[in-house]
Image (tube, rainbow, N blue to C red; front, top):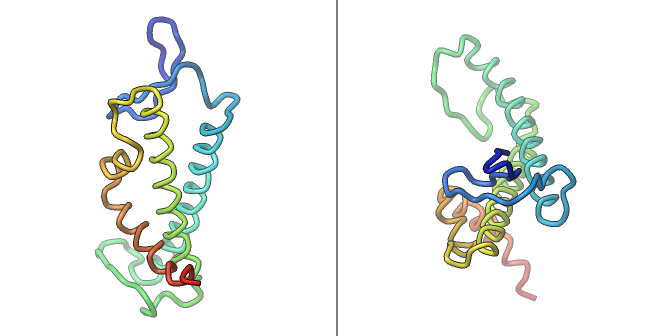
Amino acid sequence: MSDTSSETVTVLDHIDKIVVPGNVFHEPANEYWALICLWSGMEFLNKQVASCQEVVRQRVNPEGKLRIQRGGNSPGFEGIPKPLIVCSFHWYAVSACNYVRTVGAIAYRQDTTRPKPPEYVKNVIPEVLPFRDKIAAHFSWSTKH
């Protein structure tokens, strides 16, 4: 939140300069409440996965001097809830896209010369969107009937 011309505003995107009047997160409603929920969920997921990563790092690289990339059933992953980590990445990607799409929708509602929400998502998190789309595609077979 910043103050310009003695008017309180909330900055939603510093790079694209998406600013809304007031302190919308003080008593949030509608899309601002959704942003808080999405942010909280992503923070939770990040902490859960980071704690699992730290357990594995302590097991396989206690000094932290090596750069290691492992996955699947590699030694050191014993007792780590790998299915929950996979779901955490899925949930995070979907939440991140929903968060950015909501910010894009707010910006577009203010100024229709801005990118539409789907384009805004492509511009802001181009690496996350294809992963999120891939997640959705994996389960699309279930909508066949």
